[in-house]
Image (tube, rainbow, N blue to C red; front, side, top):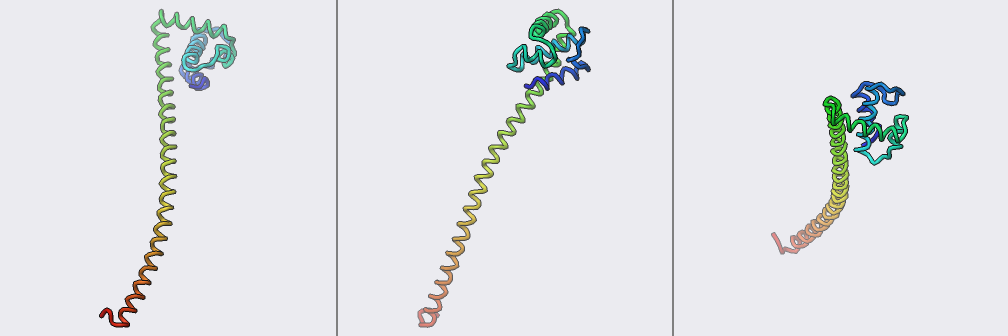
Length: 154
């Protein structure tokens, strides 16, 4: 999962820019959600997560701990967190399915390439067999003319 996608989802959910420098509760909550979701869904360091919203690693760590306490004590925050988490999981599932489709597409492309190559080989073989058949017909026709001429056949 990409931190930019997570950031966009959180910002759309809260209808605000989480990089805004303010201590208003809704911004703090949104950033904390972002920190936790990014931490849970990526291998990014606290420092990288913080830099993506103009904060430091200590702020990210504090935000994650604070959010955990809020989730344990406040139903509305827990509900928001679960909604965001579900959205992220849905997007991950879609991305996974797209990757599966890409793999299937690659398998189909490989199979198509092999079938196309085999088709060309068979066309060449068919052309060669048609030439051989024409030669045999010509030889047969010459023999029949010979046999007719000398009375071996009526």
